[in-house]
Image (cartoon, rainbow, N blue to C red; front, top):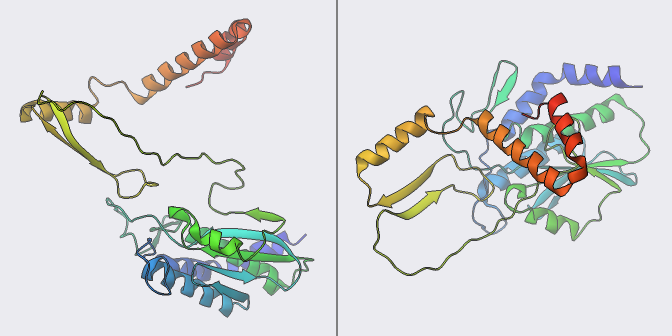
Length: 286
């Protein structure tokens, strides 16, 4: 009913929204050690206060939950919908080419910078959706609350604090994935692995392996110290890996994995062997 008006509002406020996203993305809000009044360090504290000031300037009623979480309410009616977003980011990492991680820029219709997609950009987009409803005077029967956390990337201890004081709304969604909606997300096991064995001086052997800086970030680099191999052997192995020689391509690996999966299913369901073979023939699975 109000789609045209809402789209017009967003289009007319496009640059303002980009400026607000960039303002938050210029703040390095990686999790840092606790200091008094700043549970996740200076960066997360600064990002939260910048967002709270922004939401208050747009006329929303805000609440600061001891610098763990900040919220903005659309109105004072019965709560119906919570929008759950976050202002902390994963470490910047290396290899940035278009810009530096905390110097956001717009290029070819995209915003580049740490946090533009995860999750400061979507948080501001949700804020502007609430602005559109508020400033266009669109009637709603219940409240919408935007909840901004500061520890999503490292365990969501911030939200634990929040929900000890507040009840969940009947409906909640998080603008922190692909559009329009994902109702299932893969999990992870932050496990530890250990092994015991007798000491040995046999060579070659791996002395140590080091990779990554956070448990929830795919390592950009990995380093291993190996003893008992000549440097030339390692150099040749690295060159083969770099060129792709002697290693199966990604397509070959997917085909092999698919065939193994089909065999496994056939063994588990012998009566469906013909059905599975027909499925593979009609719908290539790689």
